Amino acid sequence: MTIHTTPRTRVRRPLRLAAVGAAAASGVLLLAGPAAAHVSVQPGTAEKGGYSTVSIKVPNEKDNASTVKLELALDPRHPLVSVMPQAVPGWDVKVEKTKLDKPVQMHGKTIDEAVSKVTWSGGKIEPGQFQQFPLSVGQLPTDTDKLVFKALQTYSDDDVVRWIDTSEPGGKEPEHPAPTLKLVAKADTANDAKAQAPAAADGGSSDGSGGSDTTARVLGVVGIVVGAAGIAFGVLAGRRRTAA
Image (cartoon, rainbow, N blue to C red; front, side):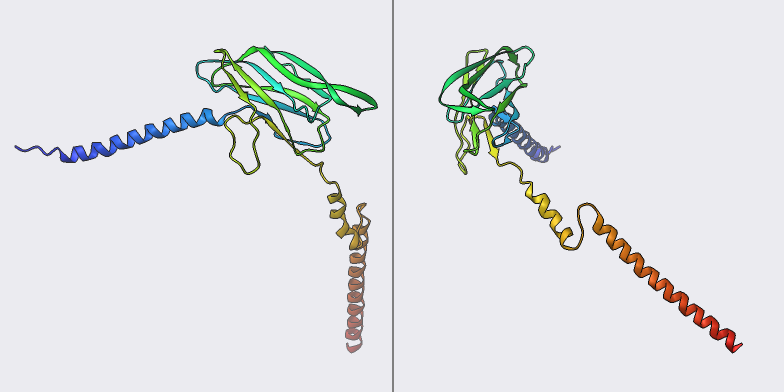
């Protein structure tokens, strides 16, 4: 008796190829996940000239070590006279200041120093986790479109990742981009006045008098129509009585 094994072989081969392909795809995803994570500023946008509360988001990219320290250096070209860290449970924070080359005026006071570095230590960010370090900052500069923070992330195995590379517009993102806060102009309140202009041009106003005037006109027209109908009805009724 002859046993045919060819069909089984043909069935198993595609299954093996599919399994190999799935394993390769999952490997790519596992590798791509940690590579995409980096230290960043949340939210990434704030208004120029104002104050903002931001968080430095620090993910742990290692499977066999914990993050134990974060050092954040502020841009000396755009000093911030007010930098206040929020307490993070389990972490110690140290704020360092340096003298400014050119003092600045703020709230009627002359400020000759600014925060240059903030360091968090003593805590742990375990593998597969992240931590946010909140900061209240201001006044934000008005002469630039971004504020760059350079960060050093230290692991429990003494490895230090330097998040200090700057990104160029339209260019490829560097391997270790520096956390960057985008600065935008304050919201334009003139749009509200423009939105009210069409109503004013049509005889309306923001206090609702235009709407009342229109309603009165409509009621007046309705009254005239009803009155004319009543007169016509009376005339017809009189003619019928005379004919009778």
